Amino acid sequence: MYVFGFGTVLDTWVAAVDGNPWPAHAGSSACATDVKAKCLREALYTPEQRHRRDSTIWTLVQAILAPVQFLVFLVSLALVILYLTTGAAESAAIVSVVVKTLVLYAIMVTGAIWERVVFGRFLFAPAFFWEDVVSILVLGLHSLYLVALASGAASVETLMAIALAAYASYVVNAAQFIVKFSKGRADRPLNSGTRHSFARAAE
Image 1 (cartoon, rainbow, N blue to C red):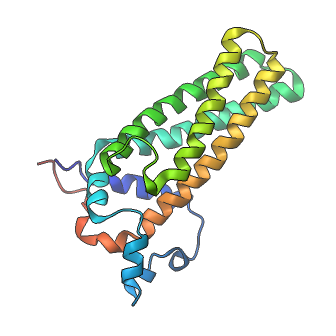
Image 2 (image 1 turned 135 degrees about the vertical axis):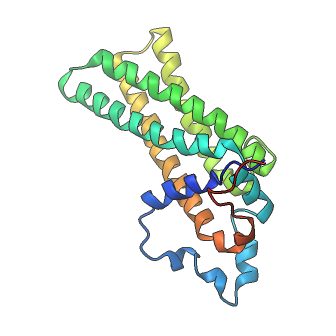
């Protein structure tokens, strides 16, 4: 069953944050040259994987959760910095990190399902191996914050330090995924036969 080309939603979001003004350098036009065979070997998705990516509802879920998580991150980061610099908004800062962690859990679980649908495994598919490795670090640091908060063993300053470490790892991980999905968008011409338009209805 096709889901109206929801894979293009993720492409659109990545295009909006991808600042590369030279798409040819990223490979978007290179695959139209004599090195097409090399591009085929280096493409992020096989035609079958791209078809599954564009057909699954989990692609849309990821496309929605990713910017939502980023917005929650920005608000929480502002509150954490406000507390550390002025001592104000302590409760708001603490709660905001909890909310950010819950959103992270949601995107990690649905992302694992997405990876299983597209690549046949829940984590560490070769195409996203290092992204998943860093994701585990991000998840661990966020979880450490919850454990420290629940146990009451850490001061607020320690909690905020853990949160900042978690957020730093999150920024690195987000950059990894933007670069990787940008590559997937760049090699789209390889698989033009598998693209689905928004006009295609469910079958």
